[in-house]
Amino acid sequence: MPDIIDPDTAPAGVTVYRGVDDLVAAVGDELGPTEWLPMEQARVDAFADATEDHQWIHVDPSRAAESPYGATIAHGFLTLSLLPHFMSSLRRFDGVRMGINYGLDKVRFPAAVPTGSRIRGRMSMDNVEPLPDNGVQLTTTVTIEVKGADKPACVATLLSRYYFHADTQTSEGQP
Image 1 (cartoon, helix red, strand yellow):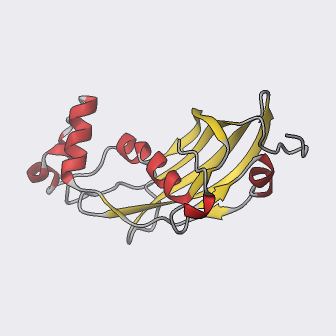
Image 2 (cartoon, helix red, strand yellow):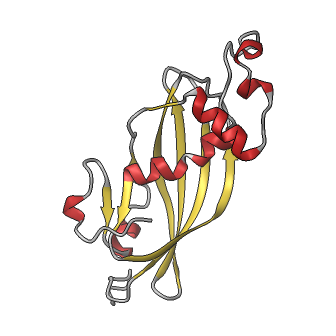
């Protein structure tokens, strides 16, 4: 995960958190949406190859054209795997020495992502819990939308752990 030394050089639209206090203050905030990302057949095929999941609805455009979707659709796990892309388009951390994915509490795929469509993400910071060693566990809900669709393609509750450098402020105001 990027450690931005100069938060003023972060890309436009990215929220930069400079320590635990910023994260605690952001609970309840929504970030996004991101720019639209095209879901191309080449990406779906590459994911099918990487995961050995070559189900026809993902990789056979002729057969999928006869399906209720009218086209191939992205794997749900492909959509889920784009969470880091969308999240890094929305937020960055200054003073982080390490960040890890801790897990997922809940994942749902309410709607399919047809190839040729465009998707984007938005997120909300749900909770911040302190951890030893100047760390925090963040609970974030990420929603991936399909352009023109009534329902989101994916809603996931992600748990992440970030550990700040010792000289970064903690929520108690101590370095």
